[in-house]
Image (cartoon, rainbow, N blue to C red; front, side, top):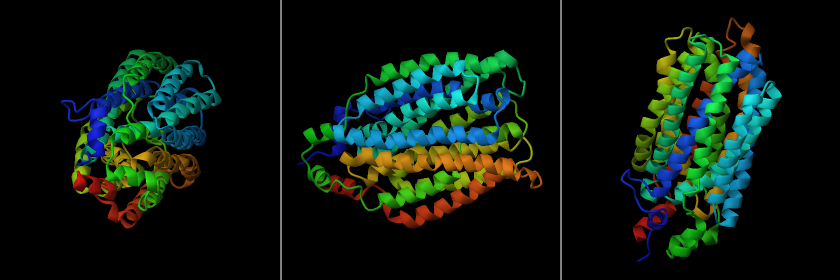
Length: 434
């Protein structure tokens, strides 16, 4: 009797750990944790550095963030395709983490917005190189029946790193400037220096991850599903429908830089914002594994639609807020959205396509999501500035617009992928034969 792909993946990845995930998933989670510690320390308050220290307008901040995210997404398409063609994932993931770790320290020397743009470009190229092969490696390291939990665990670890990073941010900022509202230059440059160590540690941990992918699966698995996937080589019928919904939602999802600027606009100091974000990441890290488990049982589209609906409600709340008190519950809802949707969407991609095309599929998914990041962030920045004369609606306008677009994306998801609930057809067939 043929063994399941998931069994081979678990064996190749070192077996299941006490946390209920394979060794590879555990290590990839640790890598993401360390990387997010570094990123949160060095990059999260970059919009405040641009606005408070360099005096950059919101439209330019939108340009920088949009170019950065679009660059990452366009790079993901090529790296995902290469990982499929080379039948290997790990090397590209190591290169991507390495480039990001080496580029961020240059923020210490940045004194004009064009330099920040160049550094963000290099950092996002690194993210683009690693993201699709890493997601494909993660999918190959998890059995299909617990794939949602594995992706949720990974997102939880990633977000735990963000939580730790933000606690460090709060300490450094408070030690540097107390509760002063605008970010001071010396505080930002200290943050950049502190971020170097966890970024480099992440690269070294990544070297311990084992290669598990199409080459491993094909060498070991002799079941019919593997043969069928190699013969068809397509991306399935439902995957393009999901891409349409994801692209529309991404158009609503402008850079989180605007959420941070809106929070400051409502009156919070940067030290208080760091604590708000720490609470956000605590909720996010707790919700993610549970959301992954729910998606294994209820179906991915149901959980994703719930997350996107919460996003729409949260953005509307940010748009209508007129004081600081709503910020705390709104960030709590925002964290629940992330926990429900982020890891689950990536698990759904793995459900919808065969293993040997997952690198390409993740590349396409990330490209669609990122290709809309530039127009989404540019639009948000321009609407913020352009709506300033409409009875003070400047800071609220991009959030109301984002809320409406996100609600439309939920409708498209429900119509286009209603048949995609639960594991994919190929995974179901594999389990019935196993």
